[in-house]
Image 1 (tube, rainbow, N blue to C red):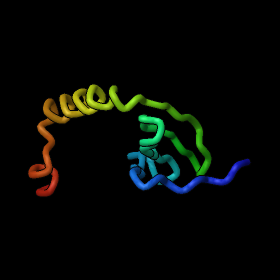
Image 2 (cartoon, rainbow, N blue to C red):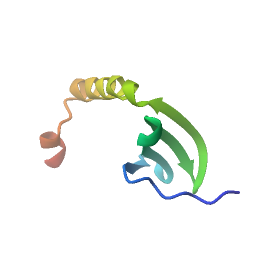
Image 3 (cartoon, rainbow, N blue to C red):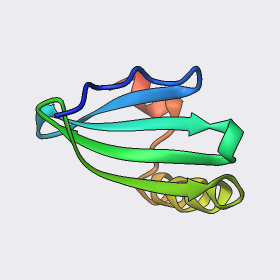
Image 4 (cartoon, rainbow, N blue to C red):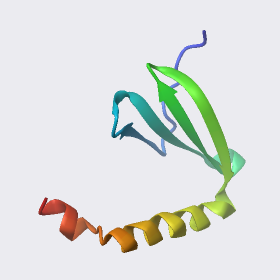
Length: 80
C-alpha cells in the first residue's frame, strides 16, 4: 500500500456526515490545470476523479443551486 501524500498548497478535506472514517479530499494541481476529488475511507483512497479546471465553475454552479433550494447561506448556517 502506498503512503498518503500531503495535500498540495491548494486543497481541503471534508468529513462525511456518516463519520470521520469517510473523507472527501479536494486537491488542486495547477501545473496540470485540474482539481482532484478523492474519496478516502480509513486512510485509504477508494476512488478519485480528475476535473479539468475549466469545468469547475459548472460544478460550483450546481452546488450553489442546491444550496439555494435548501436556503442555506453562511448567515443561516451560523445561527444554527
